[in-house]
Image (tube, rainbow, N blue to C red; front, side, top):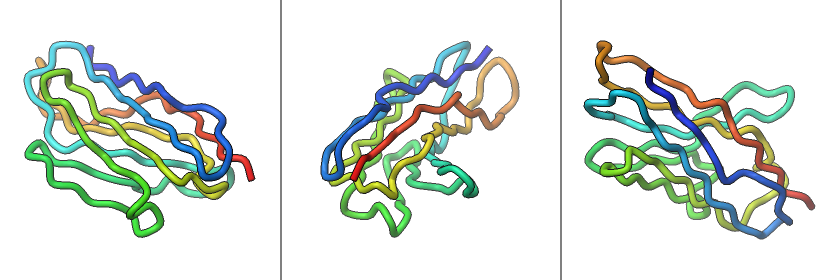
Length: 119
């Protein structure tokens, strides 16, 4: 059973930093693209950053220059380094990945980790 488990969320003052991790486990053969999404209260879930299996990255305009997505393929883990956090970055952050396991390729979501940046 494939699982994505996020960690690293928390409370930080505006201008501070946090590093999120998302570890995939459970009969994994390969992981294609990996993503970080976020959802603030009363808003739709939005894409924050993505990274391909080869390491190519893309970012939402709102986080460019402040957030960095990376991955460790040996550990089946994706990271999101968040610097210069702003109150508007407050949200639940979700990991999302395209994974081939003992099952055909499927999309998986983590349970989410709360990030709160206080003003």
